[in-house]
Length: 293
Image (cartoon, rainbow, N blue to C red):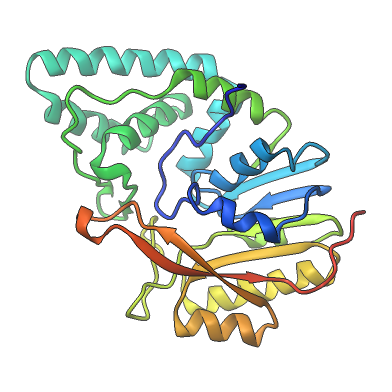
C-alpha cells in the first residue's frame, strides 16, 4: 500500500476526520481547487488521496497566518534544509531532557520563535516543533505576547514524521501557496473551480467568533464569505462553506440561497478531554450547476 501525504501540522478546527462526510458534495474532478482557510490542509490531503485532484490544473492554498504559510512554503521549497534544522532542535531537546530542563527548553524555543527577526527557514522549523510540543497542538497568538501556548509536558519531546514531510513536499509541487484573507482567492471565480471554505466558526452558545491570530472573524465577514461563495456558483464553480450549527449561520446560509447539510465532527482541541467529542456542524453548498471549463 502506497503511503499518502497527511497533515504535518495540527490545527484547531482541522477536518481530517470530517473530510469523508464532505465527499458526496464534491465533484469527482475539477479544473481548479482552492482552499482560502488552509490551516492543516486536511481536506486538500484527503482529495489528493482520493484521486480527485489528478486532472486539476491549478491548486491554490491560502491562509491569512503568515507564519503558517511560511511553514508550508518551506516544506514545499526546501524540505531538506528544514529537516536538518528540525534535527538540530531535536538534538538540543534531547540534551534538555537529560538535564530535566524540558520546560525551560520549550520556553527558549518559543521566545526564539517570537523574535520578529528570525529567518524564514528557522521560523518554520521552530513553529513545527512547537506545534508538536505545545499544549494539545493549540496555536494561539496575541498582540502583546505573540505565540503564547504553554508547554505540553511531553517528555521526551515529540518529533515530526520526516517521511511525511518528504511526501508533503512531493504533493506540493506546482501548488500555489498564498498569504491573505479569503477575498484574495475568491474575487474572480471561474467555471470548473471547487472552493472549500473552513473559516473560524461561530462559537456555540454566544455571538463571539473563534480567533487564532488575535483577530476575530465577525458576522460581517461571514456574510461577505457567503456572498463570495454564491458568486462562485453563479460563475459555474462550486463552493462549500463549513460552520458550526448556530442560528446565525443557519439563517445566513438560507438567506443566501445555499443548500444546508448537517455534519458531525469531533472536537479534538480543548482544555479538557471531557469537553472533546461529537459536535454538530453545517455545510453551505452552492446550488448552481458545476461546469468544467
